[in-house]
Length: 201
Image 1 (cartoon, one colour):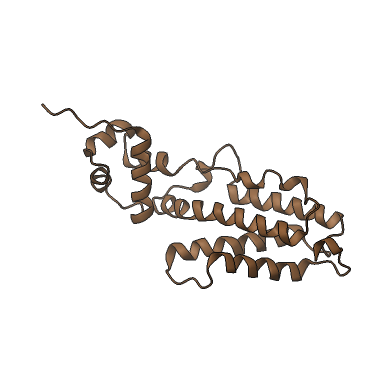
Image 2 (cartoon, rainbow, N blue to C red):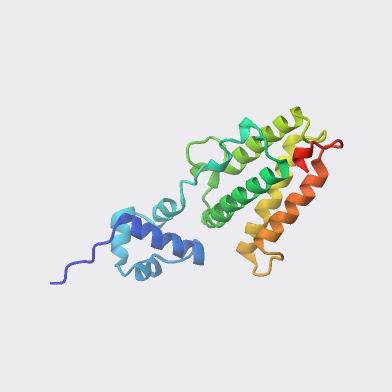
């Protein structure tokens, strides 16, 4: 008698995640099992139902770790340099969660319910922390008078749209790094102080 292939829960979740992200919530457990080289029964023995497998594979969604230090405000470096770092970290974050959120929504699961350790969805946490960062910059007179909440929402929205479009279309315009460079350059033109600090040129 052939012994059943041993496969870890982690390997199952990795394979299921790939299938859900590639094919959406409608992908069958048969297809997932075939990808993994196991029987469909193994999936149900380990995770109960398809929805439970989907939740285990795609959630909980991580809080935006890259925002942890934003509430401390900007450091001594030029603000455009720091904004470019924020843009890159935020794009990494959105590229990871946008496809997951799309799959969860397609399955009728509210993403708000599966963010880790937070009463607020991760993008809302990011917006509030970035707004706090901008308030520090405003208090330091390193940006011109503006509404930090609106600027943070506009900036993160502009970062989120590219991963969203990449999820639904092939041709999304400029490649990532060029897009981020242009976005930060244009944002800085909007919020740069009238009397510039040489450090922020």
